[in-house]
Every structure is written in structure tokens, then in C-alpha cells.
Image (cartoon, rainbow, N blue to C red):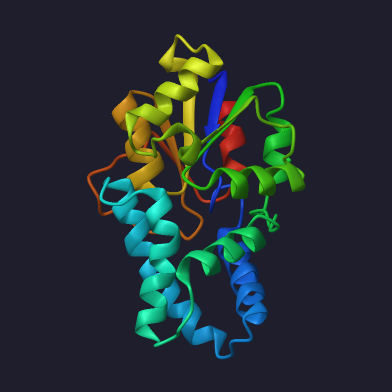
Length: 227
């Protein structure tokens, strides 16, 4: 087994339970606007958001545009007369308050405290920083690399360049990228020449051409790889 000194962690759906965070923030913002039938809106929103985040990975839309565009499309679909920019701002404020963690996340991060840990996330700076700072993971990362702040997003090499520069890393063989997304985390790591560990809690069959170095179904399985 190789020895890794530096672990890059994705945040959403790897360490943070984004589905729970999204549901909570969605409920709060819709309650603020006194809108009912949240379930139908949330279902549509998830479909719209999935497409847009994939477009972001492929460089087809900017993160700043994505934020309001997802709600603009939602409001058009359901004939709601709301301002998408203001609504998105309110949603992000609520999202930044959510600190739901994936099972085992706190334990794994604590047990890896002797390693150099960094978070590399595609997302909004204020939201991701707030969630980390309010969570049990606060202060655990040497660096927190957020796509909005860097101008790059996974799988682009630029965001890894920033991480390597900030952490003064010279040996790629000592770095492991951990994340749930094949197209973002795994593809990004593989393109950059670092080993990858796919967190696949639902045991989804990998039918893509992307081949991670390792795969775990529980975060604790990472400990057997890096300890």
C-alpha cells in the first residue's frame, strides 16, 4: 500500500451531507417567501441544478450565472413571479447555515489529523466557508480551496495548481484525492496525475471510462488506505 502524506477532500456528498443541507435550505427559503407545495419545486430544482452543475464542470456556464439561473428556470417552469437573483441570495444564506455531515466524516478527519489535509470544493466561497466554520471540521484543514475564489473548478487543472502552490507540494505521488464525483473529483485527480479514491456509498456501478485508484463505500474505509 502506498503512503500518502497529503489528502485532498471534496466537501459536498463526501464529508458534508449535501442532500440534507439542500433540503433544509430549500424549505427555509420557500417558507420565507410563503410558498407551499415545496416537494414539487424541490424535485424540479434538483433536476435543473444537476444539469447546470454538469455544465459548470464542462465550462459551459460560470458559477455566478449558475446561482440565479437554476431558480430562473425553476420559476419559469412553475410560473412563479419571483426575482431569481434575490431568491438565490436568500437560499445561499440559508445553505451556509447547514452543517450536516456524512456518517463517519468527523471520525475520519480526526483520525487523519497527523496527515496534511485540504478541502477542494466546487462552490460559493461564503457558503462553503460558513459551513466548514460552523461544523466539527472547523480548523481541520491546512487549506480550503474553493472554486469561486480560484476561478477554476474541478476537474480543471487550475484548481489543483492553486492547491499545490498554497501547500508547496512537490511530489504528486504523496497526494490522494477523495471525492464522490467521477466526473469532477476522480477525473480531475486523474488528469492531474494524482491517485484518487472514489467515495461510492450507494455502490453505484461505474460504467464510465474513469478508473479511480481506490473505491470505498464507507468513509472509514479510507483509513485502511492511508493509515
